[in-house]
Image 1 (cartoon, rainbow, N blue to C red):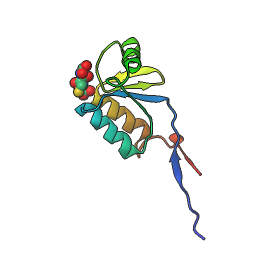
Image 2: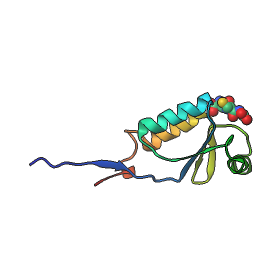
Image 3: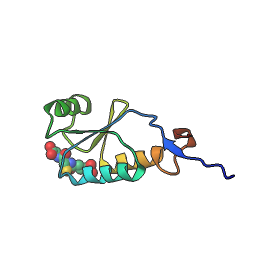
Length: 100
Ligand SMILES: N[C@@H](CCC(=O)N[C@@H](CS)C(=O)NCC(=O)O)C(=O)O
């Protein structure tokens, strides 16, 4: 009997995306998250004053998208997408996946 192997993504990082609706670069990042099957927290800075203050306090810039990686801000959609693909894409290190 063939052995079945199912893989799930284990999040090796605490990821939070700061964004707002209608922001094109944010959409690109969100599309990448969906493509990679990553369910992370999104915080809308237009819907939440608290989220905006977090972004300004930690990131220093009022610009979205911004991905907090273990509490550290990463700006620029292309840099965020590159980072996500490197760490959670198909060619990412097998240490990020585990069989169940
Ligand atoms: N080059 C940046 C552009 C980011 C950008 O222009 N973000 C806009 C929203 S789409 C922004 O944060 N503007 C400041 C604001 O709306 O307060 C990227 O690709 O991430």
